[in-house]
Amino acid sequence: MMKKNELKIIAAKGEDSRLQFKQDIRNVDALAAEMVAFSNSEGGRILIGVTDAGELKGVSQAEIGRINQLISNAASQHVRSPISPLTENIVVVSGRVVIVLTIPKGIDRPYFDRNGVIWLKSGSDKRRVNSKEELRRLFQMSEQFHADGLPVKADLEALDKLRFRDFLKTEYNLDIPDAPEDLRKLLQNMNLANDDGRLNLAGVLLFAERPEWIVPQFIVKAVRYPGNDIHVTDYVDTEDYAGPMRKVFDDAMAFVLRNLHKIQAGRSVNAPGIPEIPPLVFEELLVNALVHRDYLVSAPIRIFVFDNRIDIVSPGHLPNSLTVEKIRTGNSIIRNPILVSYVAKGLLPYRGLGSGIKRALEAWPKIDFTDDRDGCLFTATVHRKAETSSGKTSGKTSGKTSGKILAALKQDGNLTIPELSSIIGVTERSIERNIKKLQEQNRLRRVGPAKGGRWEVQ
Image (cartoon, rainbow, N blue to C red; front, side):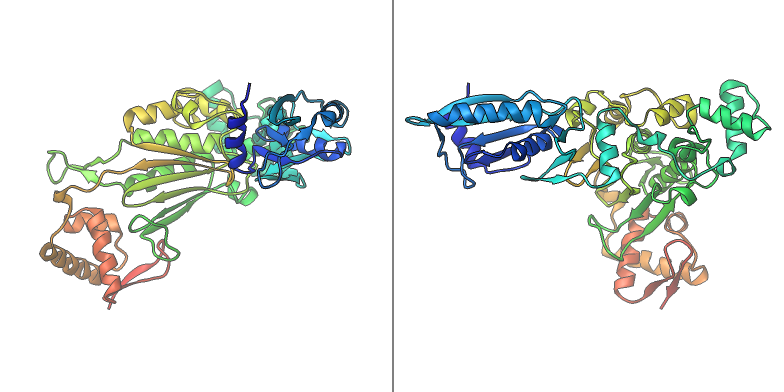
């Protein structure tokens, strides 16, 4: 049972998305709306008899019966489906109590008030659900709906028949049907097309020839920044990756790997270096991002490469009751079951549900995860080791490197960072650092975009 001192500590923190104050309640519909908002979100408590400022005024003994009856009516008759809140009376002064009304996170979401309005918590307040996307997300959380089964405006002509043919042959030893009706029926049976014969989102992402023409928001954007912060215009390398999911994965992996330091580790100068972080780490994190992201959020996956870390940012926070602590131990909730089922058939490197994060951590423990529920984002941050002294350059050596860079770019302004690194014999980070200085000194400038542009020596 809660004590008065505990109540004071809770009230002193103020209202938030899990706590609300009411000095009194008299409107049953208003209370029902608050209950709906809590039930559709993460649950919470309403302290009845507490002012907006957090002062424990309490309600009189005579009012307790009326308020409890109002709570009962709101929970059973003014909410659909009915909910089961808990109440606890805490004496704050003689003859007056604060009623702690606890509303659990709903297991039958979405909940409506009696007027059919769906409410969600928004900070310490509440708001109506007023878009299809939010409504779909509520159904997705209750596992009554999955985004990868969404119908999209793509008929059979959008299908990459060669890619689909190869998959059928490899996985099922089947030939692709020649007749459009037979092909449509097969796609429906494979959960890649809906009843009207059009491809669903999973079908487009996995097997469409040009998914970005149909769902342009579901791509991967990758940027390599100098230093440890995001810059508006200053970057070293940037790419957008589109196409079927396997191609997106391969291209994104190549971007990350080419922006990692290579360690010779006793190998000869001419031998390819070992990536500073095991590639397995990024395989697991990229598969996780592509398969488990929230496809109801119209945004791309983003990869940010900095000097001290690599961030992989996925749209959508962790679903339902899943937490960072749980995913670290191998727990998982399937948000996109169709995608998972096909990735498990070898379309991406997949080694078992729920085990990818654990494998990444075993290979490289320096990974942090951030579940941003307000921003609706999930970020995996892979920390990089600082370059050793052998990877740094003295001012004298740096000057020589700058001169070599300028000489190389005078001959060929289209050289890339990795190519310059190979020609000059220093790390890519050293090339990036020297190029930045040369740009600051107005001795070198970039003409055109990172991809397709060229260097111009001043």
